[in-house]
Image 1: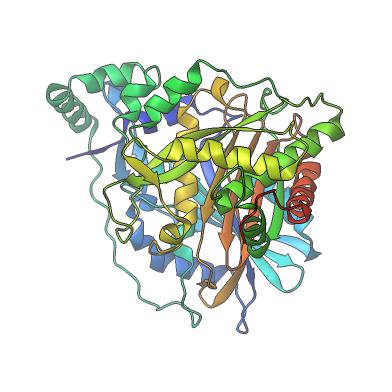
Image 2 (image 1 turned 90 degrees about the horizontal axis):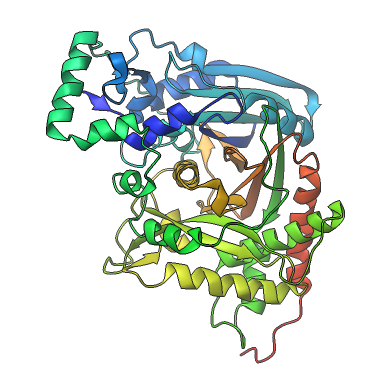
Length: 481
């Protein structure tokens, strides 16, 4: 039995080019533990943990003649030293230097002849810190057979790794004849598979999406609803080159909670969520960024964000573990609205319209943080997959917001102090925003085309200013005590 790539994963491979590599990543920053942390410790840690993600020792093999989707095969020549790499900043390395390193590492395509992932240990950060940069291809993280490798590097154990190595022997690689026989057998069982293969799995979003367990079925009705309203024109939609910029922004989770408490109840809305406050912060940052650029900003100016949201069936209890089901919400961020509290309530109303009803409801942040292991890297990857499915004509920017655990995590005894997502850019999408809440902080990763958005740092500073603007905003009239 061959483990064949889905039509969607095959489409990601075929659409990938030098300017739009289809991999996700993260930047994890750690304090150096008392006993130190070096390259050999990272290699040992990954050697111990990789048994939890067997896909990361497999590579992709194509079927002769393209008669079927490619298959996963064990890499008999798997070389962990190739995938785990070492880098350093001139001491004392600043966060700005780390951002520049990430911007250079992340756009490089992964080697198709090997397992599609890489990890970099970055030493020399100021304040006795180091960083781990991860890269994982979309096809590795489908929500069913795999998780992002960044999610298994850390755990709640402050004492270090357990030192248990799992034995692994690669299975024999199928021959070309076996691949052909397997592809023909699959065509006999599922004739539509051949049609999907020929069409690259992307011409019919509905047919492809219906086969992907990580995407909610009602995303199709959402797409139909917004397809009649193309996204507004924006400098965020521009040709994408090979070079990138990356900006890390750290904020305090308590600030978002304070905004929710002060502004979340009133005459405009009964309740808002932390995610609504985050989106209002992003809307405020876009407003100031556009004004700084001299772009026209009118009362009706909007930026449409595709916001992946984890959902579950309405008849499933709150105690049930969250699934890998993600649906698309399209939110027109009201950047033309000058009042921050009004922006917040408009966003909250739009999000509730899309996440309530239809037999599904949004998964609470509390439920997501209870997922075993460090789930945010995997959930960011699922959100990025969803963004890759949707036509760029329907949105200006993808925003993935994943709540993480609010207790410290460790990698072989080294405490993780912050974590920043890296969400890939699609064709014509010059910016992607990812953010993760972790241990009292909310950490943004802004990933942008270097030429289209050379002022990504201005947008980053705008996030901090927009959050403060919400904190300072007057309470709405009719606020209940």
